[in-house]
Amino acid sequence: MSGHNTIITGAASGLGWAMTQVLLSRGDSVLMIDRDQSLLEQRQRESNDPKLHIGVADLSTSDGIDAAIALIHATFTRVDILINNAGITHRSLAANTRPEVFRQVMAVDWQAPVELATALLPKLRASRGSIVNIGSMAGWMPVLGRAAYCSAKSALGQFFEVLRAEERDQGVHVLMVYPAFVNTNIEQNALGGDGGRARHARSTVGGVSEAAPLAKQIIRALEGRKPRLFPHRGIYLASLLWRLLPDLFHVAMRRKFAVELRQH
Image 1 (cartoon, rainbow, N blue to C red):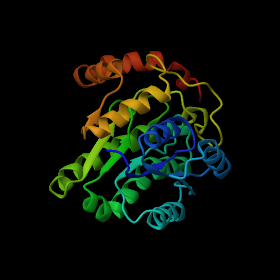
Image 2 (image 1 turned 60 degrees about the horizontal axis):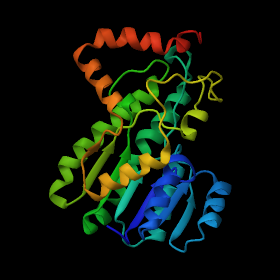
Image 3 (image 1 turned 45 degrees about the vertical axis):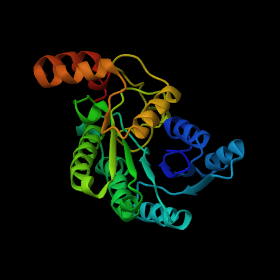
């Protein structure tokens, strides 16, 4: 599994940077795509690895998605792994959220992964490569104040479950990762309903895990060509509660995320 050409979106910090370091250590060539040019350049200097490439693109816009695709084709003639890691969330009640926030969350969390994956399918078929998508427990279970994020992550999972079945005979591997709360910038940069930064602290279920151990778990699952990874047992149990006793789940969620209901 070493020596592959890998693309990671949202790679300049958090889980993306942690996965980049693991992949570089095993000999991969990695193209990091992120909207933060200064942080990308900083990471490149820190790494000082000739196999690390960087590219700037804002995946919340159609032009940015097209730019990312062009960057990939310009960097690698062969693509072995695409890791759709870039993500954005919000903390705002649906009734208080502007439509442009819904559109931005859906663009980054669903539209960009879909367009990148479908654009790269010819190269991934040729290499019998892998697509890794960072989903979320929110794609399975409703979470107060995250209507758009839950919707986007649910759509992400459904799309790539279908794509896995459609591309199986072409040799393309799809790994869906369903983490819980991870200590990354996604929550620190969460949008409020007006499109600015969310002004109240997030609520969580269970503990908040660190990016580095999760990155290693993901790469192990990638190497084993696993279809799904549920890295946090507590969240898997919560998903069972949602499916078996949804009304009880709603009671528990409203209590745990009560701070969201006070944001009227």
